Amino acid sequence: MRKSIGPKTIVYPTPVWVVGTYGKDDTPNAATVAWGGICCSSPPCVAIAMRAATYTHGNIMERKAFTVNVPSETHAREVDYFGMATGAKENKFGRSRLTPVDSEVVDAPYVEEAGVILECRLRHTLDLGLHTLFVGEIMDVKADEALLDDKGRPDVTKVRPLMADPGNWGYYGLGPYLGQAFSIGKQLR
Amino acid sequence: MRKSIGPKTIVYPTPVWVVGTYGKDDTPNAATVAWGGICCSSPPCVAIAMRAATYTHGNIMERKAFTVNVPSETHAREVDYFGMATGAKENKFGRSRLTPVDSEVVDAPYVEEAGVILECRLRHTLDLGLHTLFVGEIMDVKADEALLDDKGRPDVTKVRPLMADPGNWGYYGLGPYLGQAFSIGKQLR
Image (cartoon, rainbow over all chains, first blue to last red; front, side, top):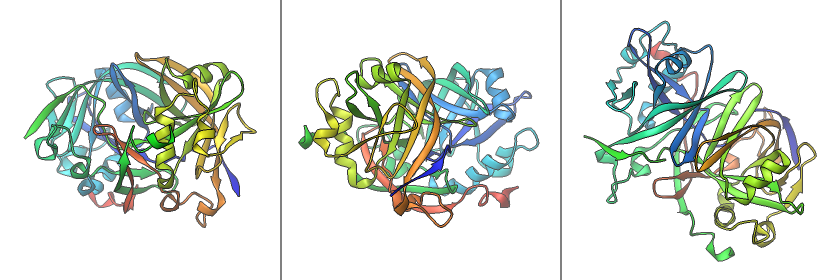
């Protein structure tokens, strides 16, 4: 039996990413988002959505840049803190003991401890209501060398990304490998 | 040691969603996407990105509607097929043996077997390059009653959503629960 649960933002998975920006005084700031996703292959772009009231929203409008940092399971506590506190009132990097690093590619800091980071230049801004969608062109991806596989790509089983359940706001880890895309469905063709 | 791997669409997790649309002859079509995410809380909106060359792109432009269907681990094969074949040449629902259902809310079909479905009305279209971003307002969410928890919300551990690794194109399942958002980070405040 199928039941209507109303117009809600309930879907799975949603990402758990830390967005790095500079504040007005050049202080590095980190904010956690679950609203976002890749939105173009060429040029490679990623979208994140922020409320206009947030510190990060102003920072992105000002600097036209942000980083998307993929935290690992081991940083769930810090990530959750980044999603609750505001950079307008506290130095979140300082309190978390995670380390901001100045990007050499875009005008934004990234998180040293994140396994994979995307350095993004703002390309489009779209006001949707409570949230503004920021589309960033991915200028470079950086990964911790220890997490790369033999093809030089990040091994997701070593990255151990977080994901969110926006219905009940739980954090979850990566589950079992289920098969190869563009392959396991071939028998149906 | 941190290594640059170039401007690529590598980030985790990405969703694995099936997009339901009608073709010109009213045939229900299903296409799999990994580029997308929630993009606004109010009004509730979800974004998906499609190449202009795809059948689904034309369908959304024509009908101004689509559904986002969250498949479960058990449908990985069908989902992979939906991502490889094109509705311009084959009846994908027919071949997959999954069942299209006419939405009563928007001008698009949904997948009967999907645990959670979002019925969306097209609100914004943004050409980004190879992909076009479609922002849909979520008019309703429907869930299989058997998957709901005691609060009437889908239980993600019963939905068993898929996620993709866009670096190596593997499908993965949901992993362990790691903690509650807006809670586990409180001790850092």
